[in-house]
Image 1 (cartoon, rainbow, N blue to C red):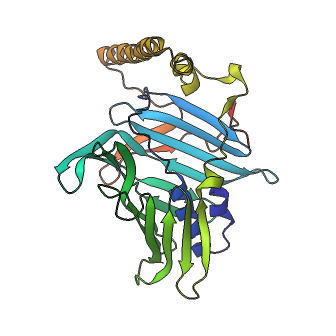
Image 2: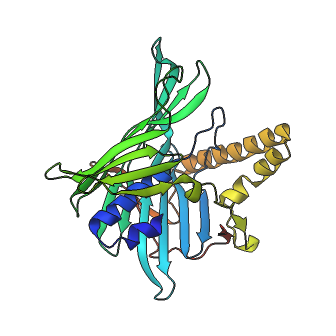
Length: 318
């Protein structure tokens, strides 16, 4: 999906590919299953072919993660793509709703912006994320809903997407549907119409000639992904997710829930102890892979310390 963003021959082709990539990053949310709480400095370094990714938890309280991703042209060995991705998952601002028309639910807002830069073309794409709607009645469920805007200042292109969830009783329309458009920012002229289901297939239609093109096929981009494998155990750092949560994960796979809870509590207690020690010494933790800074306009942001991400000890096979 990222390669398609680079391969586009025109700004419009690249923008449509970025829209498809943005949609592909959404995964079906499983009700009642909570992720691990990442610890400060936790990293995930993984490679897939020529794609090298470094992810680091850079702030504890705001749960801001920063991602630096490089795709290298193997023949020319040059950097052609960088991604900086902020995801404020830990500070979900929840709006509790209880109304006869929509049922009892929790709406979680994901703050922050996703920033994708195509270095070859000096194009910067900024986008937000949809909200997570968790319903408890009549049937427990979780769905991505709301509006997403994608902008590229350099090309003057913009997209508006609307994620729709199911009605209260499931009678009205189909859930996981998505509709939107790609248009010129300066004139608001619509160039493409977008429709489909983000967990299946999403199409764009050229309003000029009516031609339709698939920009996202979930079956191809999600269902065939293979689990990452540890290729070089000695190359794993102590803060690698596979190391930090290894004992917890193994216990879960064995369905030894008591062991999993104990191992999880041990990880969290160790993190609390380290935080107390830093506070007692008046020390400020510094990220290993990113330079962290704050601006009034953008809030917290980061820049990668390395120009390129090196190959990782963990690989995601094709």
